[in-house]
Length: 273
Image (cartoon, rainbow, N blue to C red; front, top):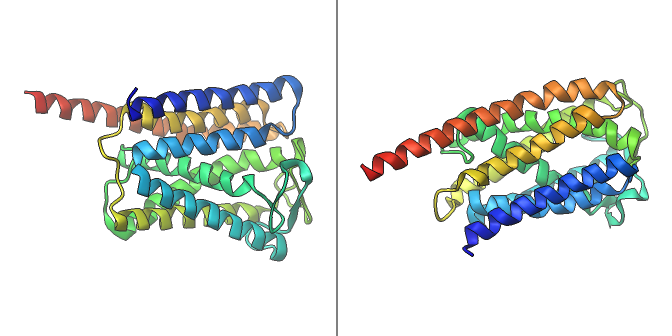
C-alpha cells in the first residue's frame, strides 16, 4: 500500500469513527464523547494536511494552532480577553494553565478545516496558490468566519448541553457573551494567517498533486458538524443558526471542490493529448 493510499484509508476510518462517537452521544447522552472526537479529528487533520501541505507545512500549522490556542485560552481564563471570563469543568480531563489538553488540539482542528474550506470557497483549490500577504490576510479572514460559524452552534452546546465550561459572566447569546465570538474570529484569524505566511515563506507543499479525496474529507468533516448541530444543537434555537451559518460555507466549499476537480481533470487530459 502506498503512503497516499494509506493516508486516504486512515482518513476514512477516522471520519467514520468520529461519526460513530456522535451517534453514540445521540443514543446514550454521553457527555465525554467530545474527547474522543477531538483526538480522532486531530489525527484526521494531520493526515489530511500531510497530503495537502506536506510534512513541513503540517508541522507549522499544528504547532501554530496548538500554541496560540493554548495561549489565548489561558489568557482569557485569567483576564477575560478575548473570550470573556470562564473556567473549565473536570469533564475534559487534565490540562495546562487550567486549559484541558484537548482544547488546543480542538483549535488546530477547526482552524485547519476552516483553512481548507476558505481556499475552496475563494480559490476553488484546497491549498492557497499564492498572492502575497494581502491574499493570505483575506483568505484567513474568510476562514475565521467559517470557524466562528461553527462556534455559533458549538459554544452553547458545550456549555448548556454537556457542561464543558462555565461562563462567569453570562451573555445575551444563549448565555454566551457576544465578545466571545469576536475572540474566536481574532484567534482563528491569527492562527491561519501566521500558518499561511510561514508556509509560503518555507514554500511548503506536497510532493505530488493531492487527490480529490484529500480535499473532500475536510469538507466532509466540517459538514458532519453542520449536520450534527443542525439536528442536535442545544438550545434548540441554535439549530436553525447552524443550518445557515455552517451550511453556506459547506455548500460553497463543495462547489469549489467540484470546480477544482473539473479543472484538474481538464489539465490532466490536456497533458495526455
